[in-house]
Length: 382
Image 1 (tube, rainbow, N blue to C red):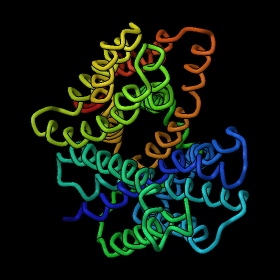
Image 2 (cartoon, rainbow, N blue to C red):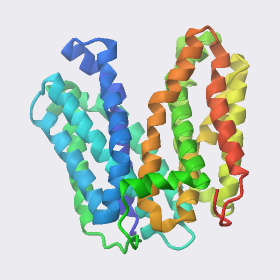
Image 3 (cartoon, one colour):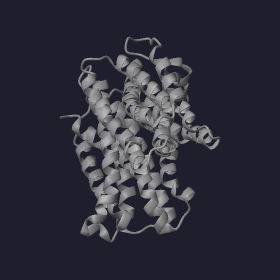
């Protein structure tokens, strides 16, 4: 029962993913270009890059629960402004950036605080389940953006109709977390930016953080290029849409929810290793350019990608739990890989590589598989 308020915050972490689907409606209302419309998602990634490490340091000083409440509060403010009035595009971007900062704080504090509310030996399992809940939040928020326009009270608001609903959910989460009593793991000495970045001198942590960078980049590449790639393989648009990103992200969510059950009979290290291998094989299958094999590849990548984040995160934090806040900040900063790695895959596609461009996510997962074979300083370490 103690993890329910934390699970609610994980669900709300997925709300930032609604910025992508919302871009089309925003583009039409403000009469902006395709490039300008991508700023909604871009500002979220920039917030992760800029505020993840400071967020980890702040969590170490004020506590993870207080940072979680700060993130929920910032998100509530960011959602309240568009709920009350139609903002200018500049104000909207400011709200989206604030939402990105708040969501960054939720990620930075939410992942390690799950360890504080979990029974001994259940952290990896609970974190995998929480990531599945986050996936449900991403899916639900995406559909909610469209669904609320059919509700009479929100029809006049158009694309802004989802913001009041999001605001209420944030308020409920804020109250539920505020009422939760948590005994947090705290460092003996408050960290600094230098000591936080200094953790990267340890190969264990550097390899793990870089692994997160590549993982998020590989997942974003699949989400961005899977649909056009399937069409290039000969699928019609409807089939490509059904077996493209929608199925991929659905499998991610299912895989994460199943991951918590799998971890009852499998160690986190074994689950991480098998997940990395399956993701690498799936991406390799996509490189064949065969439409029929591509469907198998989508299933393999969907399930293979599913539990990389919770496994790699929890294994790394267990290596040095007293530095959980700093490690969380570094790993959340690595989410910026979602903005960088797809550029490489896009460049290969522009160069006419077609299906061979899936070598990018395949290479990312080859790296993850290699570090899964590396012995750590603890039995649970990377």
